[in-house]
Amino acid sequence: MQTLLEEQGHLDAVGGSAYLENLNATAAATGTSTQAAETVRALAVLRRLKSAAQHIDALTDEADTTTAEALADTAQAEILAATAGRAGLHPSVSLNEVLENVLDEIELIGSKQEHQVCNGVPTGFRELDELTGGLHPGELVVIAGRPAMGTTTLAVDFLRSAVLTHRLPAVMFTRDASLNDIGMRLLAAEARVARHRMRSGHLTDDDWGRLARKMSTVAEAPLFLQDDANTTFTQLRAQCRRLHAQHDLQLACLDTVQMLDYGTRPLGSRYEEVSEIARRLKLLAMELQIPIVAVSTLNRGAEQRDDRTPRLSDLRDSGALEDVADLVLLIHREDAYDKLSPATAKQTSSSPNTTTAPPPPSPRPSKGTTHGSSTSPSSSQPLRDLKSRGRISRTVATQRSIGTRPVP
Image 1 (cartoon, rainbow, N blue to C red):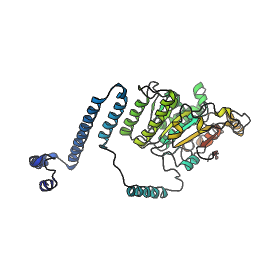
Image 2: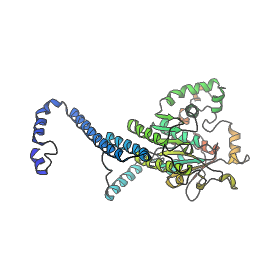
Image 3: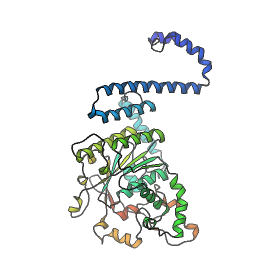
Image 4: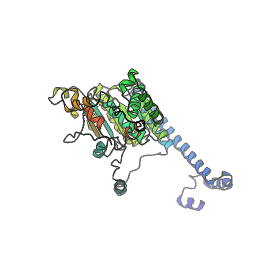
């Protein structure tokens, strides 16, 4: 080893011959190979932390009050990279290596069974997964609609599919609803109990039984929630990085973009602030390699048209959302404007229950009152919830209305 290091000119860099002799003398006292490997890993982490601290110290000497926030973000990213083993610059990869990875991914997707139509994070809606392939890492997905159109409900359904059906860790930052409201939505959807009955307290014995059966399943879901009204985007980004490092975060959801502040750095207008948040959300998704779902509101442009159908240009407060988003889902409910629409007739003939909690079936023997297989947002779940709310318009040249299938 000493001869090899001398030939390569690295002997002095590793500490010289005296250091190698010391290593040889103490090798027997280091214990097992696993302990030795852990020691090497710990020393590598300390070395990367020292390098990152020196770089941060150099940056603070040149910083001022206007760059403090940017410096804090840089320091946080460098410390996270040092502790996660990603020290140094991100390496450049040749096209040959990229194509090999592409072929491997195509073969992996093709080897899946026919019923597995989703190669990303499943949304819980089969026809939507067939169109998009699920929510892919590094993507920014925007759910947009006018108030009371069901944007939060759809975002919660995505979370249900991730954390309850597939047990993927996820986080939701909510500014439009409280933590209790989100928990009630999840429990109502899983237990198939109407949420308005839960809010009013008018629950039957059958409702209580359904809630009791689903309570443990919902409680064990790997979902993290935060509803702090004073949280800024920089704090949100720090939370996502921490959860990704500690719990291998697979999905993040923000409700809503327009109610989030960027941070302490002043921006020229609200338009610029929302645009900056949108760009940073996309960069965060690419950094952590997870899909991020952002709920947005629409302006009144759709209501001024004859068909009331929303468009990309209706996104409120920012043009950057439609520029950086990989997928935009525009929620439209015909029954909200036309009480004689087919969607209204379907909803009236079924039940006045909410979309998140479909109406319970007709009375049947107690053996069939367990709805475990039909309540979870699995890949075979029909799009009944979306039909009662309207239709999803995918941002392509044409808009596609997603229908329903009967419950198996």
